[in-house]
Image (cartoon, rainbow, N blue to C red; front, side, top):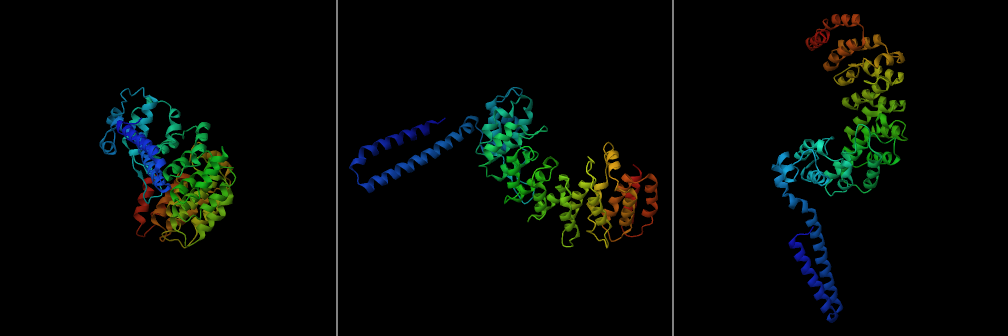
Amino acid sequence: MFNKNLRKKLGILCVSLAMTGLYACGKTGDSKSKEEATVKTVTEATSTEAKSEEENTTEEESGITQEKYDSMTEDELLEALGITDLENVTEEQYLALVQTLKFVPIVDDDRIDSLYIDNNITKKAISKVKKGLPSVDTIIEKIIKDEAPQVRGYAYQSMFSFFGVKDKSVALAKENLETETNDYVLKAAVDALSNEMAKDPFVAEFIFKMSKHENPKIRYKAAMAIGNSWSIGVDGTVDRIIEMMDDENQDVRKMACYEAGKLNDEKVIDRLVEILNDPNEKADLKGKCINGLATLWYDYPFHKNTSERAYRETINYWSKTPRDNDNPEWSSILVLNNKSETSYPEWREKATYFSEDEIYNVFVDVIKDENANWLARQGVIKAIHTHCSAEKFAELKDVVYGLTDGKAEMIQKEYDNEASK
């Protein structure tokens, strides 16, 4: 919809074109070329302005500008868009509401999990009228092509559900991801399609492509999608997650190591163990490697996976001496701090390699080792209580109260706290 000023400018352009036609026959070739170039420039400028005018139509009709949006409440936003019946929002109103996301800045900083938009009045307004909204399917074809990446990102975020992504949404993603270049939108798409690799070859190809994207924040999300139990059986996932353990970005490496065990394939063990045995690798990365291994042999809370080899390598790491503040990495101990009362008994029958006595002996050795990280020495107490007999846990009291080093009191308090449960 063009405003009066734009129509006036178009009228001037028409007159200019007519005058050019009347006088062109008496001009030289050079003069004519100059006039044609001028007309082309005016036409392009007017065309650009027309496009800008069209884009700002909603803004002009609603009166919402960046400055006004920044000072609004969600109620004021709904009022500005004419949404007064919160239980009956029209498709046009829903579209206009989602399009105000263009005013929300994208957070893109040094954190690996950035590339997101903060909580904002548009989201609050959408939540307020949630019961009255039409299906997002009624506007998704428009918003997925919107000029604002925040709006396109919303389209992909809306695809994800507990029941998976609809075939129609996957088809829409296929149509638009071929030309999508914005990092925020690509990250949202990876997130939305993360459980769909096994269902559609296009999605698998897209996720693999994103795992090699120049932006580590997108690779980080892709590692989560590839190292995912929903991706088991997809050709190339195991090899790619192993490759990502050597990504140039440390956060991507950690995510790949952490997720690797979810593919339930022992092929990942070799690289995880190499990292664990490398004295030059950082402790926090080694902690993620133990998470990856533990998923293969313990798999809390599902307790479905059983890998004796992964168990053995984990015990080897915890047993390794001399210990220091980084070895074993303190959080690696926490993988045994919980168990599922429903699925654990069946798993325990299958996991014949698992030995409560072995766990007890290794962890008691950690507690006694004054060189070990005190958080690791503290952390094993709950693991022993979780997996060992009441008699064994009672025996542990003498060990703990026999400590005399500077961290003894804190470890003793942790034992008393656990014993009270």
